[in-house]
Length: 203
Image 1 (cartoon, rainbow, N blue to C red):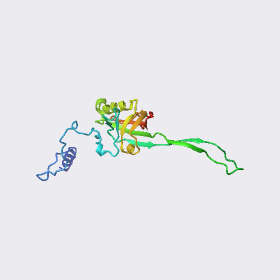
Image 2: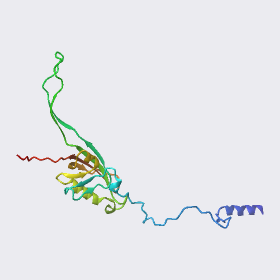
Image 3: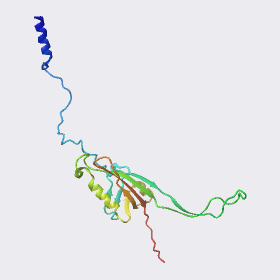
């Protein structure tokens, strides 16, 4: 009987029997079933643009003298640099025999040059992945391209620029570099300040 019992045990070990609950209830694992399907979830949805009140330095542009404004949907990085234009005249040269001679140059006249401003940011579509119509920020891209292609001065509204007295800018050049991500398009805009002046004088 022992050899037969051993063979039966070996045969049973090859099969997995269904589990038999020891108690008449089961433990809860605390994992809730999803209430929406994978297609209805927001997994592929991108971040929404920030409202003007949520941005620290919002930047808005206008090509119709302030009637309509295009605010950049995501706060850009703004770099500002300025310089002075100085007229220098070299009237004397220094030598070791006459140390009292004037060294350096004579500054006859100086004036402040334009501010150079670099605006760097991104445009983002509504979805992270999908077709071009769904992902690429086409509407914002076309609005920004229309502003940048304007051949006259552009009204600008931004706190740091307003502190410097800059209310108008002129676009020098711009670029849309390659950006990783189907719904992201970076841009870099180089502009200079444009201050109003009056060339006509009443006599």
